[in-house]
Image (cartoon, rainbow, N blue to C red):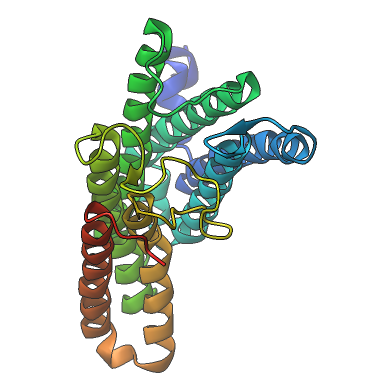
Length: 283
């Protein structure tokens, strides 16, 4: 008489996959994508030190380095916040699919930005050839995918938070990722549209990054749409940190404190956007 194992298909007799194991795969995918960003960063920094070519008055390697650092920070933030999602959800299909989309989008995005730097030409606002115009549009889709992925992880933290996590940290992480994603999309959309003062991030002033604000490079002769975009993006780190502090020092006021923090974040983005649109430099 045939055994049950011989009658049933392999998938029906195999043990269910451990949710913790699936959750670990998500983290491993993120770590691999993080490693790719570091792999791009190292030669970019080396090239920055020896390549004298300029684009918009600064090194052609400034943009890829900034984007590589930004994506490294995004992955470090997500890896920091992932444990706030319960293990079953963290290893579920939504989290796994979102992580794959994020990894592919960030890798392709930074590969094109780095390639264009190596060629000595712009990646953003570059529609000089049909191919570059198409790739610029695809970059926009990739950027949207990256930001939407952050929003999804924020939603998962909100709806499927791990038991035992402080309200401040959990709500701060969820609000930071979700609000930061929405405001990043808004500011990036305004920046990419070219509707304010033509293609580019400048509004009035010199259309050059030479002499920009130290480290950040923001224009000191006119408005710069990168300023509100910067503050919008880094809400993803600011609100989780605020939540941690509230859990530590004022746990009873965590929700109120985060509500105030969220409103202030929106006001900062709105104020710097209005400042940039009016053609006034941040500093």
